Length: 148
Image 1: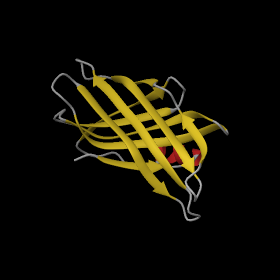
Image 2 (image 1 turned 45 degrees about the vertical axis):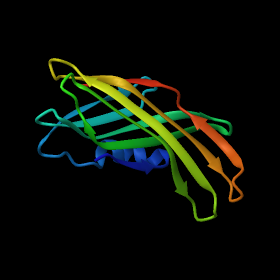
Image 3 (image 1 turned 45 degrees about the horizontal axis):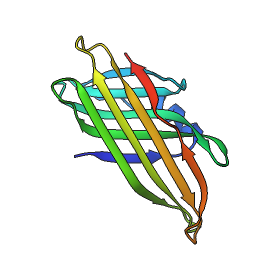
């Protein structure tokens, strides 16, 4: 099972790093993306699952620069150490009738020594007004990361 949950706003970066308790049966890896935003990944002790991963992003938007977070959980970790998840067309409605359409991806590999993970992440979204017209478009591009 794959679960995906969105977190909006730059202030949530603190929650990503400090507010998520460690899982007892997990190996934790932490580091930074090429954009200097934090990434945290928890892998099950049996090395079969990425239990959860969270990362910060800087996105280039038509309205300017924004900061956002993305989160993944319950990803299969293959025997070769690789994992991947992609999503698209995830809709998030706002009270005023406007909405966001999100897409993103996470791909990585646990090294043979099991001491680090490297890979890429991306996030993009469009904001629509209540009538459905696009009011903003944002994209992080493909961002490399390394976690130890």
